Image (cartoon, rainbow, N blue to C red):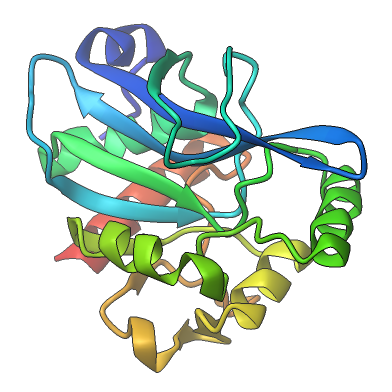
Length: 215
């Protein structure tokens, strides 16, 4: 089975997200707590899956933001290539709603810049992740809000470090507290594969193998 074109997927699914901001050291830093991919015309509130990736980078449509994720409102956003890949998975699984969360809420796709921002949060003692202890109650509620929990943050050094720091994953498998989580583990790194590999052929393989994992 091949990939469904983006133009077709846009007619089937919509993406929405909750953005907020944190002010640290005189800088206003954009954050995203969660995002939804929803099948159009479906009003369900229970997600078929929660998918954990590294951090949000496609945040150009954030608009007005609030200082608290609890105050943030859902706004429509333009899908990115990774989200189109996840829409393909939703079609194969006949899912209507998935929730996307991240190892970090910081909206920064460049890992060098991300680490600079992360250091600012650490110096200020301000959490930037659902997986930090101060966000435990909200995290547990979100993780319990779906039928499946999928780890898919890839094998970058930052992703591996955060996953181990937050007690989510040891090489080869989820930690005991997340034993119900599912992941397509890369043999070469021992960590979850990201949903969007570089080539179209590998994206099809990821979908096929993830279907097997979910069975």
